[in-house]
Structure formats: C-alpha cells, structure tokens
Image (tube, rainbow over all chains, first blue to last red):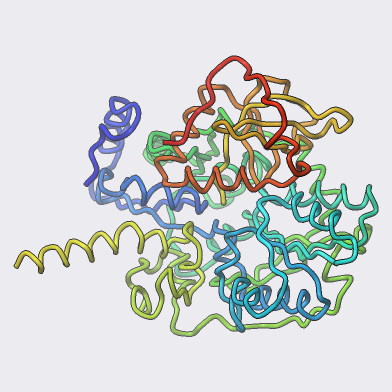
Length: 377
Length: 111
C-alpha cells in the first residue's frame, strides 16, 4: 500500500479519501468507469485502489487509441508503404504493435522505411525534405490528436505538398461509450470523463449519458487528488440520486471545448459509417475519415487498400475486460501467452491499456513478492 | 499518449505566425499554435503541448504541477524525448544558435 504523504497535498488527499468513505452507502457496490487510458495508467501508478473503499470498483474503459486499433489497419498501412516504396511515419507508441506480419519495427528490419515521429507536423516535414519520396503518416488517436492531424493536412494542401498522405485511424470517444452502455452484460454506475479529449470536445457531448442513461459523468484531471475529487463528485450525485455532467478539470477543460480545434476537424474529417474497434467490434459513426476535398492527401483514396481483416484472437477476452465483465487477470491468456513483451490482446499493447497497466503495476509487484518470499524460505 | 507536456512560450517565429518556440525543462523546440488561434498565447505564457501542437493555455502553477505529475507517472523522460524529437526547426536552428534569454519564472524540471 502506498503512503498518502508521498503525494502532493497529503492533507487534501486524506480529506478526499475520508469524504469518499463517508459517501459510500452501506451495502451498495459502485462500478465507475474511467474512460481514458491516461487515467487508467495514473490509477495503477498511484495505487489509488489501495486507498479506496472495497465497494468502489474502477472499470477501465476503451480510451487507449493504440489498444483499440484493429490489427488489419496496421497490416494495411504497412502494406501501402511497402508496395508504393513510401516512408511509413508513425508515433513511437505504434512501433511495437504487432501486425499479422510483424510490427512496424520488424517491417523496418526487413527494409520498409519506417520512421518514428512525435508530431504529424514532423511527418509533413519529412515529406518537404524528401520531395522524391512519398510519406504516409499513420494517424491514430481520439479527439485529442485528431485536430493536430487536421491542421497538418490543411498545411499540406496550402503548400501543395503532393508527396504526403495520411492513413487515418482517428476515432471518437462518445460512440465507444454508447456501445459499452448498450452491451447487455454491462452494469455501470458512473463515468470519470476523459481529460484531454474534453479540452477539444468540451463537456456537452457527455450530456446524453446523464440525461438518457441516468449516469453521472465528471471530467477529471490526472493527479491523484483530481481523480479522488472526481470520485467524490460522482458519489455525491449518486447519493442524491442525480445524474449530471460536471467538470473537475476546469483549469484545462473549457465547458464548450476548443472551437478552433473543432473547426479544423470539421474542415478535414467526416464520420465513417462504421469502424472496427479491437475488442468491441464494429461501432457505427465511431471514427473519422478524410473528406473528398482532401482526397489527394488521403492514403486510402490515393492508393489501393488491401482492406485486411484480422479477427481478434479467440482466446483473448479483451471485449469482456473492456466492458468490465472480467478483470485483466481473469482472462485466460493474461500473464501467460499475453504479456507486455508479447501482447496478443488489444489491452496489452500499450502502457495505457488496462491489461498492460495491471501487469506492470500489480502483477509484477505480486510476482516479485512471491519470489522474495520463496527465496527467504 | 493522453498525457500532455507543459511548456513556456519563449518566442514567436517571425513570418510564421502559427509557430512558437516553447521551452520545456531547458529544451527549446518549435510547436504549432494553430489550435489556439482564438486565444493566441503571448511570450511568457504557458501551454500544454500534445504531439507538437499547443492545445490549451494553462497557469504557471499548473505547468509546474503537470511536469511533476509526468515525473510521478514515470513519463518524465519519455516526455522530454518527445520534445527533443519535435523536428520542425532546421538543423542547428536552435540547438547551436545563440542562447535565448530566459523569460521570468522558472521552468519546471524533470527529476
């Protein structure tokens, strides 16, 4: 168990924890989903479960963009680069993610020109510097990242940079929440809303969750105190029988979102009729594609896409873990065939995935304790 | 990749009004300010940066706390690698050029 005084503002942390204990109603079990992968990472890293009452169960949601990307998309992106002799540029998070014929790093070892970039603008810069080569930027991310891709595309069009295109895998968070709520085996009481996605989309898009589904939502910051305060706000609503959207992360999240970012997204992207999510299957209107006006910069409109479909591995129970029906360690493959070093399921591929976070912070800790105890014995 | 990196705007790029130079723990790189056009930051302001784009303005205290958070999450080094990796400047532009004068206020550091 972690000591509260390791955190900043230990006095406030203690107060928030006491308030949580006071608000929990005897005999009631609370299932709260944190939607964002960054929150999942923070919850494990800070050991918040150790200081929460047992009756509060945190369910880890679908907000890790690397985790929910179907393997077929990675295969398609790499195949396009390989077939057309293009440079494949992607964020570092993507590099170890397995495709059917290996990860981007493994493709690089076999000769594909794979480059890590830290920004979509850097991928465009590679295109400027290599006018004789085509550069495919493999875009991933929720609404936090999509506006940056949009501005980069607008810049490419403005400068008429023809040797650059985007393989767009941007997804939107609200339809994924809806899919989870629609699932028959789902039981959730409340949501910790995403932090940085909400800086872009604001808080309004969550209002239907409160109104139509009767579940409170609180957008939250990432610090231990932020997360605990958000849980206090959710418990207060649940205790009063209310369901509203509240904003705990006001210092960063404006209620109306970022208008310039939304405008850039609307200029460049439109909704796809449906898109496949690893672990969740096809979800309608849950992803973005590039508008016709930008077709020259859309890898999918410019090249023939193989449209590879790879079924999720049958034995991996990612969907159940995503919906909170199973805990990570209850999956048959967890820690055996499926580890962060050799991920099989979606949730093990990124440090923000709930299985990887659980493995790194809980499972390894327990495993090393067992080793210590047996070595003493 | 949900986590954002705090930086201080130390200069604006002449002729390219959507670009600014930010400093994060002593490292200076160009970032795109295009998402903040409705509330353009000035020199000395603090912003949260995500994939090379400033996504929101924050206070200096929030910036310090955000850097501490990244360190506590074990992401401090990854964040600095990301900032060092931003490739918008021409070679040697800021790395070997004359040192920029620091503005007021301290830059948060990664421990």
